[in-house]
Each structure stands twice: as structure tokens, then as C-alpha cells.
Length: 142
Image (cartoon, rainbow, N blue to C red; front, side, top):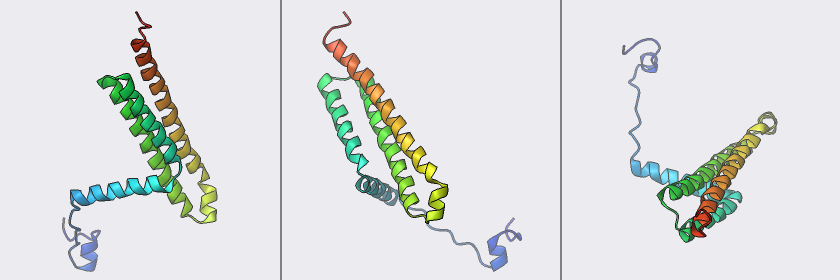
């Protein structure tokens, strides 16, 4: 019910102001800015992008089918997303005071572990997809 005691407007005496909804264009611009900040600020992205380009080039060269493309691109997206989350945790961590840093240092290790798991999973999927393509192309399975 409006005007109840727990509502801030009842205490202050004025109606709460709502922010206008953000436009989709603004949301996408902020999201792309976030990706740019994540990629620029952390050197490990270079390694991930190098292997992503290598995986896409291998998929092109080996003539992967639709399912294989989905697996390769899904793994690339998984690793990049994990790295962005890791970059987020690192950025937050560096803004903390020394006492707080000491208490939550494990968060950095967990985030780095997530990137490791995503990368190893992507490498395993890549080995299976590309190994299978090479076997098919060299007619090992006949």
C-alpha cells in the first residue's frame, strides 16, 4: 500500500524518483567498453586471442562442419568469458586496502583456476575436433 511506514517516500514525504530506462544502444556501448577495458588491461588476453585465431584458422583449413564450428567457437567464447571474469576480480582486488586483500586473496586464485579449467576444456575439445577432422581427411577410419 502506498504511504506505508516502511516506504522511503512515506518518511520523506515525496514520491520516489525513478530513473528513466537505459536505451539498448547505451547498454551495448557500455558492454563493448567493458570488453575493451578487459582486453587492454591484461596481458593474458594476447595468449588467448592467439590460440583463438589459431583454432579458427584450423577449423577453416580442416573444413569443419557446423557442429564442429559450434564446439570451437563455444570454447573460444568460454575461455574469453572466463578471462573477462578473472580480469574483473583482479581489478576489484587491486582497489582494496592491504588488510582486505589479505583476507580475500583466495578469490584471485579461484578466478585464475576458472580460466585454467576453461582453457584445458577448450584444448581437450579442440584436440578431439581437430584430431577427428585430421583422421577423416587422411582416411584413417576407413
